[in-house]
Image 1 (cartoon, rainbow, N blue to C red):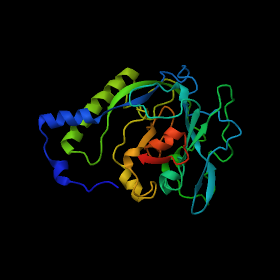
Image 2: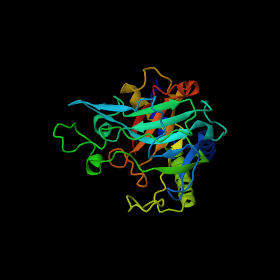
Image 3: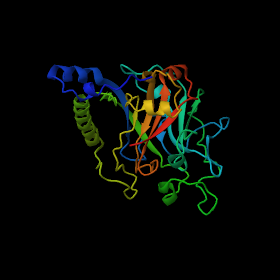
Image 4: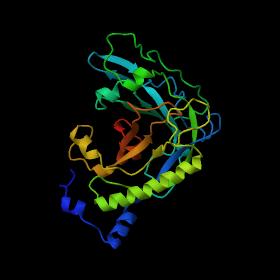
Length: 301
């Protein structure tokens, strides 16, 4: 359980030495999934966003069940990552070195009904899938909007129903980052947020796109510098999800890490609700064992 909040410490103005020490302590490293300039360019082998996965037929396509009334539909495929392609860098969490992760998410009902009863799934395939064919989306997508008995769904999906996201290759880029916790001193948090904003601006410049271009006409050229990431340090939000039952009580929250964070991205036509990101969280101990059965999703800005 998290310790009680010390408001005096959170609001205390730090000395220059304390601020510098806090910045150093918050330094960490993560991976930026930088999309290729064009969706036809080559990216990292065995890795891409959207499109269709090379998920072997022996593995079930993940499903999501919405309640009131009950309806089960296939999840949307979001990303495929070959673990052998992930760069080695200081601080990289312990994880399997081979195999492929297939990330699935439900953008239809889970943004409305909540993520407690699912909303995401990771399928871990240990065998080589480099020569496997792409798997078509099962029946059930896009959702039949003419069905009067549908559960309440995301307004974004209702306006733009899809069966799959647009395929886009990417390359890995190791990036410096800062861990920002919700209970952190507010002066330190402000300093870190300013530094992160500068870093994000630099990353945006390297992608040579206009970050303000939102939902552009599709051209096949990237128009959105969404900062898709792996292993970025926790943001101090897990205490709430512990209360909501997504995490067992009395859990050491420092054991959790966001395995993958996919921002709302007009290039691949992805967003949860209206523009929310998807963050796949996992316990570091589960990641080290290659156990992805307890991964959970947090949506939001």
